[in-house]
Image (tube, rainbow, N blue to C red; front, top):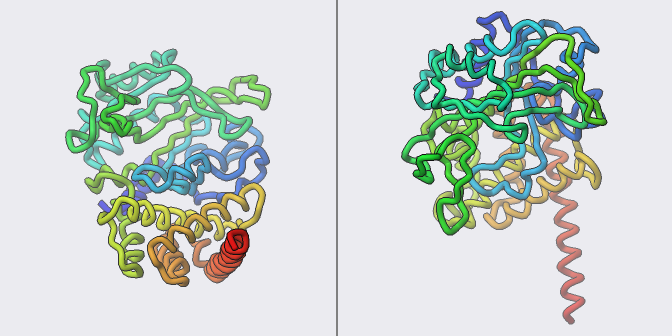
Length: 382
């Protein structure tokens, strides 16, 4: 199933359950100085959860643009991203654990046709109520695992905001994925399986159901929310791996089409050389991220989110050189991303010329910095 179909199926399903389809907010959080970039679907709904503003509907669904900076240096392997899409459904005081759990099982098994026997659940060790609801939805106790707050407590997104215990749905990826083969293997397994330090990949966290019961302030104090609420998030990229039967996110249609475009502009091929593969993944991921950041008004600079953009854009430039790409290839990649993603995120096309201009200017600046550095090195060794 193509990623566009997965996304649409999710939003349509929750529309059929009377949720309001709501557009993604900007990657630049509005009215939230505690957050560098939007990193979760609920960020734009913080004021609704806290009761400080009235929501357009008490139940909503979105495909939210998200960006997380902690993994920038890890991008290049087969698992990490900076930019991703978070599919979510939200209840602001209307329904709670029972309905959220029922919706998740119904969508995954009846709409996407996933095998319920491959779904495993983790819950907060204090949340016995959720365990009973998972039983009612068809998940037996032997596939429900309890963890502490480090694994099954979510939020706040930033220094303050809504938070609460969560239930996570994990999917058994099957025998084609590296596994520890231990009897104790289950969700959150981190057993090292070889001398390279690779960890067990049998289970992947697919969908997080957060049961918002508290609002935490900047000092860490919590108070009960006006009404218990639900915030869920499921990464489109991870779901695409499962639905498309591939080994990792870079083999999904979200990335392979970009990688093929890079191949057409290079004399190198993906999956021919491990070091080249890293470069393919970095260029494709960082150009996707950069395109979305620029569309939302971020420009390269030396502080805050501007520095984040400069960092990933220049990293993409460096690795494009390793692949021998022509100077205009990065702009062509951005054009390709805009054409394919614009139906979902119209701000891309609306800011198209601005996006290309920023990319080209940063390439020129980086080239000047690079040449200056080379000259200084040559002078030093003379």
